Length: 116
Length: 158
Ligand code: SF4
Ligand code: SF4
Ligand code: SF4
Image (cartoon, rainbow over all chains, first blue to last red; front, side, top):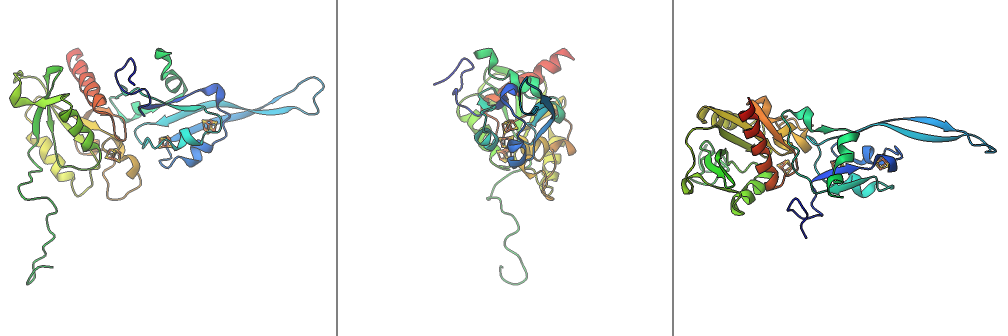
């Protein structure tokens, strides 16, 4: 089956992030064999009335994948316990410099959106 | 080892192999784009470049009318080792002006999976000025065409 960009819908073109699903657990960062994922987060305390103690939640500040280094192995996609990472078939993101292949939350969240 | 003092395993390439003479193709959908492919079969990425040819995305320049002027693109794909770097440099020097270099795949872009390997060139831009870096390990053949078009658009704008 092909999609609107004419290649198989399941093609491993690029990795998309759903930032709201990411818990900053760092599993993808630690398991990536190319060490090309970077993540920054901080903890916040959420206080709820009547709760025993404040709850600690991680807030994602930055998430980048360096597609200049990525070997498209999919280990990050497979290991993410929260399905925050997914393959998208997009292939058209060549850059004029290697740093242009480093993509942050905004770009990673945009993949696949235009076809939804 | 051969007889006497000669070593047989000097050249691993098959007879007749010409690593310093790139072949010229044009983009089927856009014959003004001429690409010279440095076919030294460096690594896995060359299969995707081959696939761009066998699926007709790239066609032999001898078979289609294509303007002689315009930029000639040297496409470098695969894992360039420091031992092979002089061949890449020689190929670049032989491409006629005006010319541009396109890097295809993680290995050529940055060293990719071999980022920490001492013998691998950490991006072919250490050897030649690269205009467009096409991501992937390997990139799809369609990504090659998209990258070439992106380069053409930049050349047209400038
Ligand atoms: S696909 Fe593999 S190399 Fe790329 S970011 Fe995921 S784990 Fe790392
Ligand atoms: S494995 Fe998933 S949830 Fe954990 S940091 Fe990576 S993307 Fe976020
Ligand atoms: S970028 Fe990946 S597919 Fe291409 S030559 Fe390197 S290891 Fe092989």
